[in-house]
Length: 113
Length: 117
Image (cartoon, rainbow over all chains, first blue to last red; front, side, top):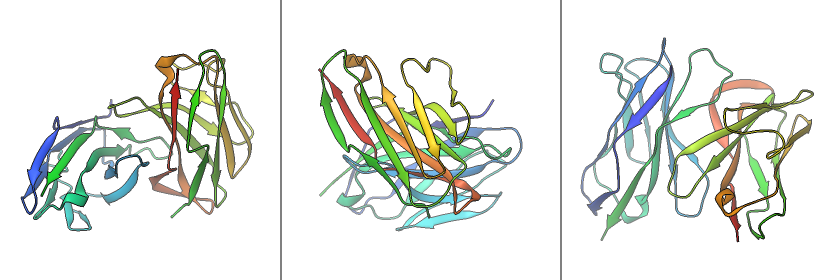
């Protein structure tokens, strides 16, 4: 079946540090891949997505590249800010379409000044 | 992208009571999804609601506990019935289409934060 595995948190970084949150997936075919972010007390917001192999999604300084050979979609940011403190969810959309997302367990990021 | 609103944004309820959560979308959508997010956890799909048909529930969720209505293409409600403290969660609705066109991206409402005492 379809599944998403992301690194356990919490992750604590100092401001301006480099961020990597690992995400790997299992799926039949070629799913679309997503990163969602949930700021404290809020719902989920789409951060970025990639729909085919080697695509790079990017937004707000975050990037993730769809790696078919390693079935991965790792989230990176070169210099985190305190305002990036949130929970990050990796997710996939099965290639069959019209089916709900499959989410990872989420990774809590805390950035300290 | 779709704009989704939910009411109420939060509530504190007594054990044994029921709460109905509303989800309104700014365009017609085919399917709406209801998720539960328990404290510190990821999202779990409760059910998928199509307009004009019964909702489809995921394993572990039943209609008597979580009845869903879908009266039209822009609106849905989820009721949490006979609540217990274990129902304390954030409930989120989402859609995967915009202006009638399927997208492979799901958009989420802001969530309803429920606390059951």
